[in-house]
Image (cartoon, rainbow, N blue to C red):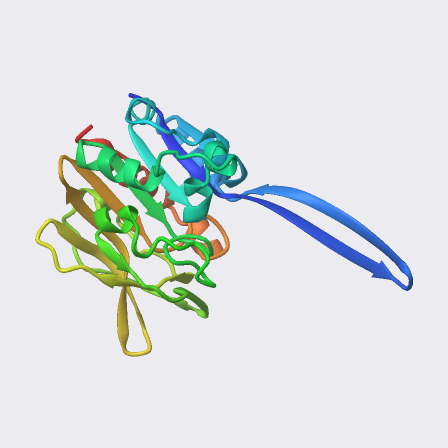
Length: 254
């Protein structure tokens, strides 16, 4: 089986420490997908990761290049990181990779968007996937305003459909999450919301799937790793199976 392409989930963190007049700077590079990648690897699923800082130069720019992968996962990487290309930096026309992904899914590809501060519309609105071709093929509609929901008290997932293959084999309840992206349920017979979270008299989709053209999409409105996934969720016996089920369902039509 072809590998899965994961775009995003990398971070550069720069810190300043002052001691009187002396100021020191330090930086570190972090990958939020290590647990996720290992879970898939343990079940024979190869993952190729392109960090957010590399998407402009390295993310595929043709249907032929996308065909090297069985599924594409966008996680904590904003729309601009895909829309910018080396050509547009030089003031020339280039491919719209969001429309390219939509066409790829319509022709039989598999796309997942996972939540985070720079997913869907984003914690401060900077992810900017509202009104894009990516939104067109997802099960959910993306708000045009900042959509991040930080919930230190925890949000308890509520399963709405236990019969779907994505939830097959899960014998215990999903642990709480500490945040998610607030999206709008789409009314579409080809779509299903499998899991939701309740917050302040409203219910928000947490896990939704959709058949789109000849392909499939999946929206997971929280992290695939810390911090919105709680430590309890990360240690949950069902974590590996849930993530593997998501990917297997997505690419079962490819």
